[in-house]
Image 1 (tube, rainbow over the protein chains, first blue to last red):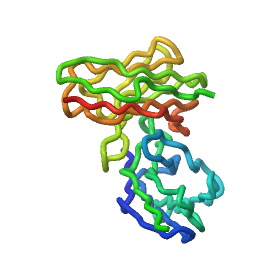
Image 2: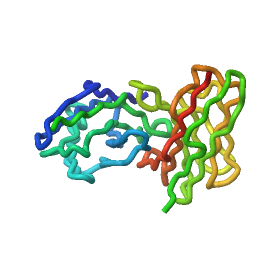
Image 3: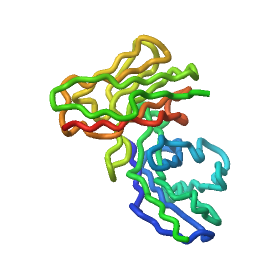
Image 4: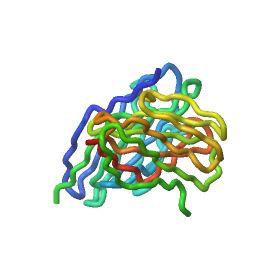
Length: 114
Length: 112
């Protein structure tokens, strides 16, 4: 079965600084990979996804993520964060040949300092 | 565009009571899912459906039941509420299996 690890429970970044959120997955083949964002009291919104092809994917709100097969990672990045980026971020994996539904990491809570 | 709609948004239940969480999507998606979200634990799949009349268990199905009589609706039933079912419940749908899922706003359930 697939699994997802987000090593950082909380991350604090100053407004305007760069951001990298880590995600490692465990799966025997190339999975489908996703990053979702959840604002307080809201549902999850898709930021970006990787299915195949170019390993650097662009998403909404200025986010990007890079799939690195050798490291089993799919880290999320943003060059300059805004206060409105404060939220919970979830990495998720879908198994091409496995069970239905996505497997989620436990999330990283992003705090933006003024 | 409504997308995925969940009702109610909040609910308090007493131990042993039952209730149904409603979920409707207007995107004509075949795949629908119920997840629960507990603090610091991410989202766990409760049940899913690949089309009308077809449902299957996810990772944490105990204490829940589902039905899928139409493409649009996927209600989640709690028969005998327990404190362990205090959680935020999310319904989601997708066009194909393991592709991006579209989420509802969630139902915050407290069992006391």
